[in-house]
Length: 277
Image 1 (cartoon, rainbow, N blue to C red):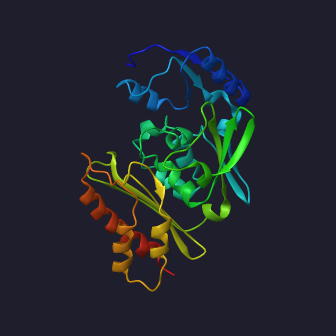
Image 2 (image 1 turned 45 degrees about the vertical axis):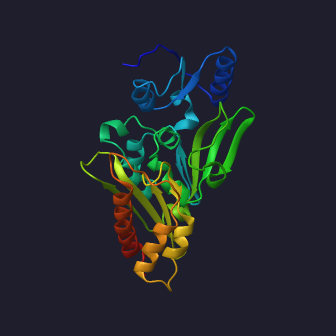
Image 3 (image 1 turned 90 degrees about the vertical axis):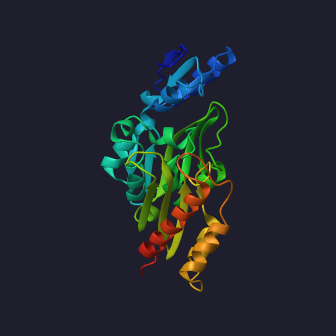
């Protein structure tokens, strides 16, 4: 049970949600946007999250869009991970999302909820980092579209009161060869040691990683090594480890040394799979 009470609001439009947030904020309340609700329930129980006014975004039509054209894929941030898994509009995203938590939790966890979560894994963002996706954000002065690398740095950096409404991705990336690997210490649904997602675009491998550091990231410097045909496999792997951001996580799931060992083997698997001509 959550150890505090809150008022519940369910707007029917983007503007209504934005106005509601500002009104509550100006009244001295602590509003919070609500999507699947898993994080509020989980973190609220241990006093990591507090709100006295929940704004449920699920009544907003644009929040649930799944639109696919010849050129772009547009996904509403309110789609659950199971909906994405079953529709399979973006194979790399579907594979990555299908290994987050268990099936029951994935029916509640939404795309936007995972990307904007406080928990540091946020695996659903990895395919979008690799595909240079566009983030559609609801702001007080209208809908704005941002390249993901402009507003995602360790987390999705939004101004207070803004929220993610959709993600738009070029079909070139959606259809590219890909691989997603999740390594766990134990159990099929335990927290991961790391998750690595990779795309091969125009002959070059792109890599993004979650669980290795306290934030998900696109490994630009490592990509240069992985795509350098003059280097041996060993040189690529050892060089990759030297170019990681820090700190490397060292917790009950696994030591930093063990995570690096797992990473090396994961990179070998990626190179063997996507390095094929």
